Length: 191
Image (tube, rainbow, N blue to C red):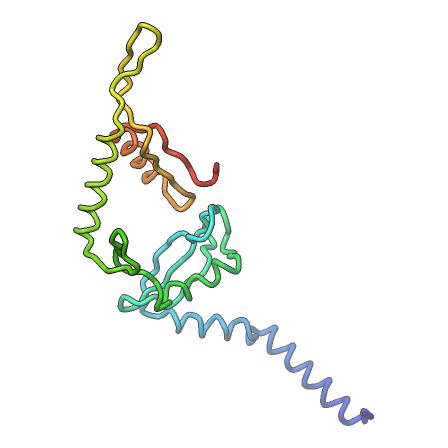
């Protein structure tokens, strides 16, 4: 391809005009930012944590009429400063997935399928199993030589927390563990 003097002048003049417009604030970044603001108009903003790994990266969720519209990294979060890994960036797809479990599921012993149950049924089953396990494995005293000491514990129940849990939630997990009589309260990042 040969470049004539006239074509070279057209390209140079167009480039100069483009740079001048960008310098005045008419760049593509501003146009993208303006369309982003329109996309989020009328939404409520909530902060949350990514649930994929133990990092606990912060995310900002935008919700309109009960529907998740946008999910992005939280620039004010101390862990990720707005950046997300590929799993975190794909979080909205897992939220919108038709395979996402949205209610408690129960599989009866010997059954090959899961069935949906109510939250009340799930709480009842969970409470009954925790109580039965605690009662069956409770150790009130322990013998050391000829001396008997009260221990009041169970070694069959453990609680596991993660990086997505807040300090307040972790405090409540510890309280619940002590109330149940277990000292096995652990954090997922240490395992």
